[in-house]
Amino acid sequence: MSLSATSFEDAFKYKIVQETSCTNSAIVNAASVSGSIYAIQFVNSSSAASFKFFDNDVVSMGATVADMVFRVPASATTVIEIPDGLPFTSLSFAVTANPNPADNTAPSAGVTVRILVS
Image 1 (spheres, rainbow, N blue to C red):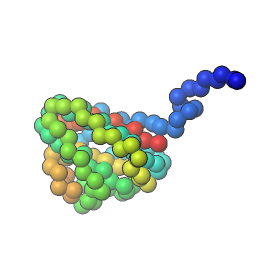
Image 2: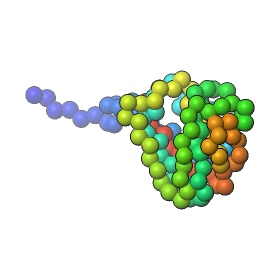
Image 3: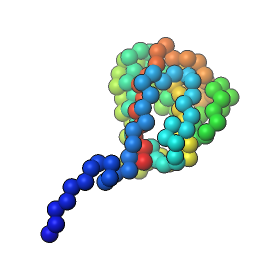
């Protein structure tokens, strides 16, 4: 028998994409590679908002329709887990005030977004 130890980054190919003040300005191709989303954490200290996910490396807010929309509750920390992973080609996202997939209204304050990807 042989014991070995390895660092986390050698054993798992996960990384965390983080934006500490996400607003209605799209963050485009945030992961720089294709992959899968396994969890999303929102830290929202203000009014309810909506997280918009775009699987596209060209996003024009108000014109590009989001592929998925997640509700971000007011004054809360929320985690969405996706155990099987949500595949993406280009991870782009924004946070808006309203849930309509084409909405581009600015939220009342920026939301911290952390995305676990592989």
